[in-house]
Length: 126
Image (cartoon, rainbow, N blue to C red):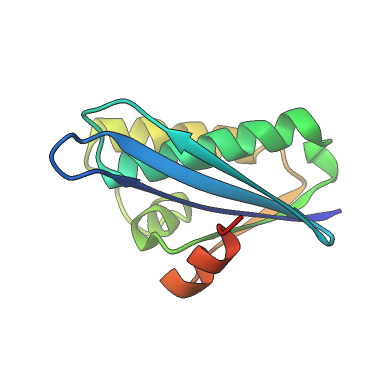
């Protein structure tokens, strides 16, 4: 079964409160979820935490061992880290990347790609 998970996250200037959205697309059905996080968070942390929540939702809803997952985001930083193209310099980022890697092992296969910000916004619009 093929499923697409699109996600993005950000952080409000000044307060550092994080937010994110993820969409799960299965066939013709698309479900969008919006998330608010606490303060003291960077946009990359919010992006990772949004991805983690989306993956956990899929694991609860589906049989991940039967899912060919395509992950889409406009966040090149996270794509590069998850795909092993950059080193994790910050312990908080490495912890999140390791958590994502652990969750992804439960799926039959996955492919993470960068999409344009316009495409990402289109996927995440309810």
